[in-house]
Image 1: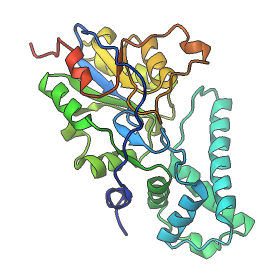
Image 2 (image 1 turned 30 degrees about the horizontal axis):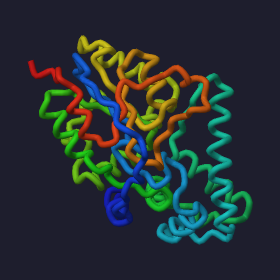
Image 3 (image 1 turned 30 degrees about the vertical axis):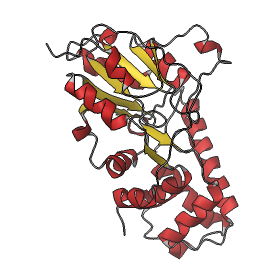
Length: 298
């Protein structure tokens, strides 16, 4: 069976961002030593604008994923995918009831529950449930339901920041397959792209998702251990609530990426972001390096 990297590489196709009418708002930011990035909708063009949501009709994506995995379910794809989303909602609800404001799950657990539920309903033969690679099923579905591609200028922008001596990190709503996706699309793992292993915070690993401050607080603590203050960090993301508001709450500087109409989220009707203004508005990722004059090179 193909690996996750091979599956993403085989099923991914070039995807162009949809231009916005935004005008970049650029200025010099003094003293920036660290740049933290969101992934989906920022470094990656996302067909749906976010991880775990559907661009290809979800029942078709599921049917194709089942076929690729050799799963012969008698339940209609529409019923199976409804079970999938109901399961995710139920898992989120249970975590919220336990006190987690913005919960995140490991999608492998959701798929495990879905297959068990289909067996109980009589929509999947119990014998065919045995031996299914849950992780690969999740990859097969995600590759079809949420196509992604590197954002234009991503490699160029990262290279410029590395050359300037910036530490790079990731704070993203993500799943276990996201690292394989990076490798498939960029041709290498996150670390050769410049991302510090200790500065990568993915929601599925911690059970908390943005816009919770939890991942940003973890990043701030890790940076404090290196004597880096929040004011020396800029976070780049495409969502005013999930990214800009949440990053501001821990004292990070912020850059809103407004280069793709699919993923740009101004959240103008959300009172939480009414008084929030990003330090920068980028329409192309390489613009960021131009705005950072102190890149820690001294």
